[in-house]
Image 1 (tube, rainbow, N blue to C red):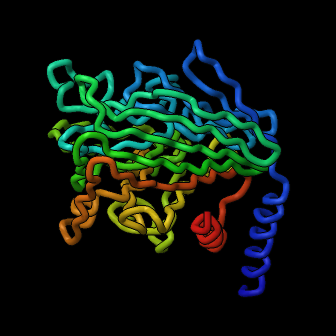
Image 2: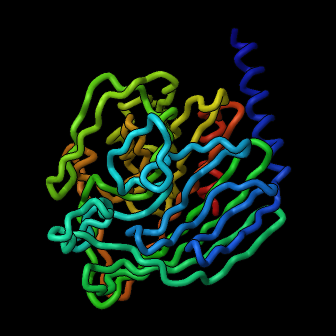
Length: 346
């Protein structure tokens, strides 16, 4: 058995590392009238950077594997049959936070009542600074402002998105620099954060009971029991923790994986050692929320730890995350350990 296990592991490692040398061309298609930039890898659609002002933050939506399987939920932008319709602020892949100078940037959406809008912040896309196609990677650089309801700028954001892929994987490296403006910006410990993805129904963990989740503003959202047919997902963290037990634990990486459209698919998020709060806590829920929360230590640790990160006026901080999406087979823990080490050197 040990010999068979070694052969299997070697084959997996060979499969992934051999593909690392066959990176495909990345091209961008700018569609200003649709407020988005599409990302093509090897001539196939991968994702789109969407900066529609009707959404309270820029997002990457949808996310697809190299084989064309969509791994993100469609709702609310492109609803699909049999998927959940809770948490309308969970759109594709995004980065924001639940308590920035008392404003909730995480939960903001068109579902918030007008009378409650002053409690929420928005991230407003400003400019596309650079779009660079490449033979092995493509780079998109954008700026945004974190604002209150009056338009006052708390934070200026500079984000670099680097896209790459091969026959069986797609990768997004995100580097986001946040700069406080005229006043100190406090990120009070909050479970609602930070770099998040909402996955397709098939990648959720099969649900056994209805649950109610309450945000920092006391707004409760019910997550109902749905038919679990075809629902195959689970979590695995770098600490070897699996399933729903991943929530509120730390790790250098975490993966959500399962089967969709008859194919094994996975999404892994890798943390970076220069990030505040490293290694990140995982705000990972079986209903399909998959987020790395670098800043929410007190609620995620059950009160055992506290960070309350802050930026003085004019000061900056950079957060780096890598997202690796695979199809055809599930990456091993050993592979993701190596991938995390490689990313840590970027």
